[in-house]
Figure 1: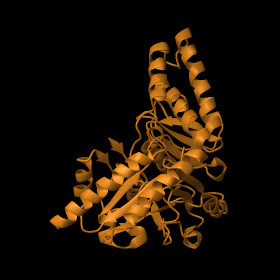
Figure 2: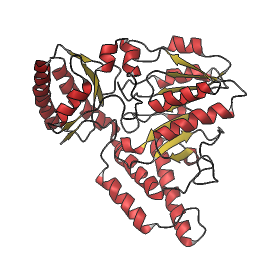
Figure 3: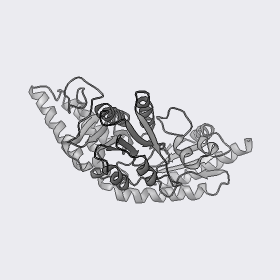
Figure 4: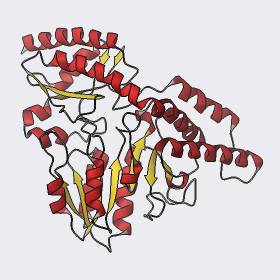
Length: 374
């Protein structure tokens, strides 16, 4: 099996599973209980949180555990919107965002908030001049993904942050789900940061929301203090500690892994450029972990299922997409044919060049077979 759908979810690392199982067996107590089993669990929770904070370059009291990036994104958007609507009702985002941002913005729009979508340049990066023109005294939040999940466009977070900082009543949220563990991330440029552990070989069902310690927001989930006052529920200790392990495995090796994945990327791109009816959607601002292309005469679902028969697994749109036309690709190319035929290859440092060569042979076989049918 060749798995090239890592942006949707990665396969859990054996070390992460082992950590999860050990905590399940050896730490049965609720970390909010007062007896010794609870105290033992609390100590491990604090140890894990301290290390997670260290790997991310943040403070332990800035870490909020959630069920995943979608919950983290919802918490920020709704938490800021309803807490600070007395300051203003204007939110800025982009068409390249994950559906958990886009759909939440639609919800907020129905509740009286004004949503503006900043333009993107031909390479997919945010049009900074347009962003400046959209900002006003009623803007309370700007939400931009550091790396989008479709095209893998890396945004200039530092430049965006400088623009937002000119408006003291406005906060800056970054969805870093596709960036964490792949490229360096500096939380100093942000007020909020979202991520999900199942994108970096961790377990499904846990994500993080990093929130600057001096910012207060409304809760998405109420019910009393847990590991933080901002998200109620019994602390999922096995998931928390396994998240520490996942970060431990990827953060120290970011640069070496990125250089390795770059070689895999270049080999695949070189192959795809040889087909006249294949349009490469990735730009020179795309992360090497993501390759997006369109098979213009073949439906993407047809192509993906044909590759599945070769035991090769690709993706189309975001795994959390609502099913609409891919806004990310259309926002750049303004071409419905390109946008509706997009396919995503998402790599990891665990993929091999041998897998890439096998993919190239299978791609040629499937492409020519399906084109012949057309």
